[in-house]
Length: 422
Ligand SMILES: [Fe+2]
Image: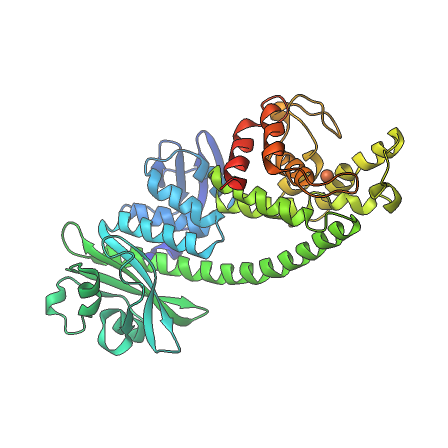
């Protein structure tokens, strides 16, 4: 039904606050005070679902981002949608979809079961609600469960009283000590093959309805798309990461002593970002930025890079240029986030402007630059170098603490301390 409506409902315009994109008319779906979608036909029912569907399929990425960044009345749903659109991590996506479904269907729990080909059963992949954490190891039989029936028939099944269903698989309830009163199950597809089941259980008020079925089917198609994208992303991502690691190793090998510096910086920066509570995509970019922060050393001659005696002023200027060379090299790579060249450019900057290459101060320095600056110094001082023996970590931490906030951000130094002293 939704799909038929969607086919009829050509979108002619979109209004965000006062700005109209496309045409404006009176047949508008109002999402909130700030957002209106203009259509060719009048749609009164299922407004919420249609609105969600519009967001997923009919609005370009730029407009969608604008919408998501505007505060809407149903904040939880929009936050989840936002997460779904920008996050490629499969498990985070599925978790956020589940939570959205629980909210929309007013259900106590939701689960995603995936087909286990080896055992010919369904296994819980992501769960939320009362039974979460207790059912993940259960093998749900295909021929003796409601989820299995949904999987085989490739259609949504609503059971509003499980005591009347012969197919209700009781082992899940027994193991989790959870009573499933009612449930709705929708098949999940990957490239037209059924691969699992999306379930919502125990509607808090009333019964599961056809409207719930439509919501489940929309989310099922959303998951299918994301599974496809995530697979492509995972394949690509592991290939690219392999290449980046090879480049980082090549950079480190040019330095006679610190053969693991880039890797160390990357690992520590990730730990710090986790402690500071940054999201998955930030951490993933920071991991790459750490590996590549010294890539500009490729342009520094060996006799300067590995000079055992003191550098002349001129040589020091050449060393400093590795930040600019690196940033230029990395900004030419289209698929890299702009944070990554920024990390290379700014990892020797200091809050008080005493760093290089440009002497940026405080908030002029990006977060990537600030985190990498702290980690870079920590790893350099605790490692053996051509001109010095390794220093104990306590001594290095004291130096960094003494220099914050003058040169470094105190909370980054604190997170480093917690990480390395753990
Ligand atoms: Fe550097």
